[in-house]
Length: 499
Ligand SMILES: Nc1ncnc2c1ncn2[C@@H]1O[C@H](COP(=O)(O)OP(=O)(O)OP(=O)(O)O)[C@@H](O)[C@H]1O
Image (tube, protein in one colour):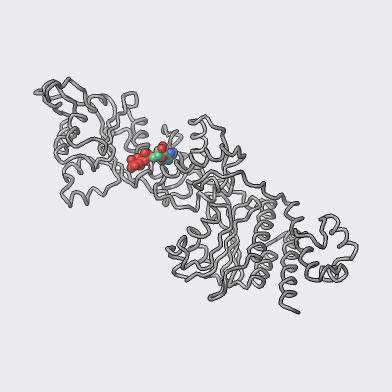
């Protein structure tokens, strides 16, 4: 057999293998065979298939490989998910790199360095089910050819369509660990069902009714302000005002007047101006970014916390304050104390109770519900159609990194929603996460269309291989000549056909 015949035979095996997936009640083995044939055909080192369920319960990945040991598979699962796989899923397009180690898109990824990855081909499953087909080249081998990329895309589309038909990605309902707290507290704005969030809500339930100072810590964009609102809404001050002061936004010289207010005489032309403490009378004063409060004002804040008394600027008379103070920061206050930039006694006064907000990495299982809920809220805020996220979009969000936490997620969702509406799309898809507005894509192939495309492709290749000798093609395809003629007619294939 010549090398070309060998390729054609393998491609035929591949397509026949794919058709076998359809017949099989348990598709794992036929899928593994398809991967095996694909590895032989593409001369890859290994192939790996990963399907996702958009589920927050347990492991949402189902995977299969050929050419990988159990530990290789683990390694691929663990190490490629944030890099090449993310790029393929998020863009909804094939990612091919001839030499990952030298490719600036991926060279920095620990997985790429560790495995010294060279040629990699990663194709999203295009039939509507979220997942990827991942091929890794042999060391020193040339990049995957355009032909291999085309075949891999066919396989990925086929598997995606077959898996969608089998309902492989339907998620089981995730348990809502926050439910008990939602039944007892007012928490409408707080989205999430994870244990990590439930732990936060447990502390909210404990701290809200006590009239004590609470310090909320945690990375930026994790919902500290929201939790401050939740504390207020569930306290006996809930009918009083909630006043917020972002300490980072106030110039140092104006901080005291902003917080405590001022009387005429504070400076020439000054009028009596109430401060935030007065505005929050009977309610809650939320001091966001407390680490930014100037040292000079820290003593006065400490006095307010200790005695519930304060002086407005230029006022000879002490004022009484009936406020509860909640503070928040993403800074390391003990470190600032060590650096003498924050008063230790103020820190002790502030953190009577401390609530730490987890970053999104600690509660990735909330991503699904956050995506759905935030999209609904954004649509109603902007008066846009309530578009829903596709399963692939969910997966893209779940596997992406969100260093800016919920705030960053919210911004990206807002942009994605606007892009999808601009396209008049029916679903929000991974490509809407990318930066630029794009033309509407082609509709994904239906199951029948995809099957038809595979058959057409197979026959076209075999006929080309045998120089359009129909008898020979029929022999190779294990079909009757009449069947091949019928297929030629059905697919409108002709000898000079360039399809
Ligand atoms: N659990 C959540 N459910 C719904 N929206 C959330 C949640 N957490 C945060 N958000 C949204 O994310 C954005 C940022 O939240 P928030 O301002 O409360 O974060 P933060 O931790 O106070 O940030 P920073 O430290 O920068 O002040 C807001 O739009 C908020 O509504």
